[in-house]
Length: 270
Image (cartoon, rainbow, N blue to C red; front, side, top):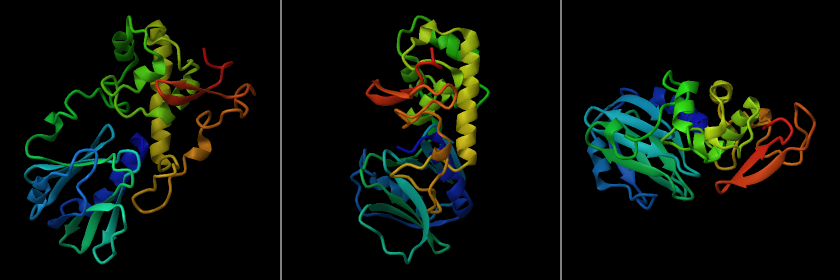
């Protein structure tokens, strides 16, 4: 599943092609996504893009009146193409621009979303209860410490909870916990404020580096320009079960936590 760095990479890839551009037509070939693509997306026609933002893993494409909320789901991607390029099997939506290009949404597994919003985008039900952005000033060790008190949930599940902090997905949660030396199953409420300082710094660092390097190479994700991300070559524990820990040489372990595969070093993480 594309995580925050992949979504941010997509945003940065499509923004120069969309900003201030006028929409000629919206083509919905198949509305059957996680939620049906609403007929109201046609309201975008004749309008121009005034801003593009990311909130967690959601892309917010604001128009002069209303806007589009896009989620890539498990296998979605966005491309900027010439309108003359024939659509493929899983190309569900095209946003054609007067410039002759189009924004094309592809999603083989159909877990993504392509929604219309009439009013303020941040007040949409999918967004209004989300936690702070992990790279924002609101995301601090004190915030995590206070939110975690008396919580017995595993720290990995805690930081992957979008109501606590947005966009820390499975890959980067495993990486950040390794960098902070925290076992992924440790109860969130049993972690000190000092250790949360290290975890916040690790989350910021791993996400920032992944964004700068174009995201992590995943089977179903390629950048908006068609080139795969290449942060995977720097992953320390994720998907390295049985491999030697880069810090101590112990075998990296894999364990299912909260129905997700987790990777950690039993010697380095406590």
